[in-house]
Length: 329
Image (cartoon, rainbow, N blue to C red; front, side, top):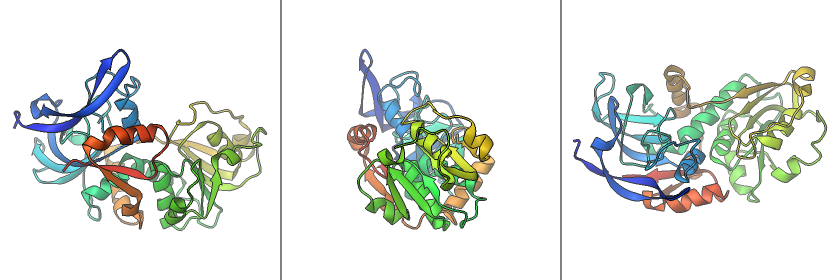
C-alpha cells in the first residue's frame, strides 16, 4: 500500500526561523523504514509536540516534519511474528514524533521494539488520555511507591498539566494524601482528581531562600523544575523521595547539598523516552488495571488534526489543563 495517501499535520519552515503546521496529504511510501506499519486512530498533545511544531531544533532537527510522540491504533502490516495485522497497539517515546514521523499522521511506520500491545482494560482512546504523560506519571509513582500511604502527604507540582494531573489521579487511586501545586486559579479540577490540598505556585516559592526548609512532604513528583523543584527538595521529610521529569519553569536547580546530607532526601530523574520494553509493558498493564484513574475520561478534551494549531498555542501559553487527545479516525 505504498501509494496509499493519508492526512498528516505537517510542520514546515515558512520563513527564516518561522514555522507553521497544517493538515496535508502525504503517502505511506514517504514514511521511514520500520518493521510495523500502524493505522493511527488516536494521538495526544504533549509539550514536546508543541516545541516540535514551533521549530525547536533541540526536539526536531529537520523539517518538514510530522510531530506526535504518542500514537494508538491497529497494525496494518508487520514483518515480525509477534504483531499481526489488526492488533491494537500503543507507541510512545523513543524517537516517535521527534525525528521520526509521528502520531499526528494517520499512519506511522516504526521499529517493532517500539510497539506495545494494548493491554486488556484499556481502550485505544484511554491509552492516549494516558499517553507519554500518563506513562511518565506512572514511572514517577513507581519510584516513590514504597512510601507508606500514612507516611505523610505527597506533593505534585504542575498539577494541572498532563503529567501532574495524571500523577494526582494515580496517587489518589492508590489512597495517598496528595497536595497539588498549580499556577491556575481553578481548584475544582484538581479536587475532582483527588487532591486534598492545593497551593498556589507563587505562594509555594515565597520565603524559600534558606538552604533547608520545614519538612512537609514524604514524597514529591515534580514536573516543572527550577525554584519549585528546589523548594520541594528543601521541604521534603527525612528520607523523602523526589522525582523530576520536567523543566518548563527552568533547567537550573538552585539548591545546596543540605537536604541530601542532612535528611537523606533522594532525587530521581524520570526519562520515559529510553525506558526498556519489558518494564514498559509491565507498567502499561498497571495503568490498565490497579493504577487506572477512576475519572480518566473526564480528564481529556478531544480535538481533530485541524484543531491542533489552536491547541498548541494554548499549551505553550499555559491555557490547557488535563490531556488533549487527537482523534485521527
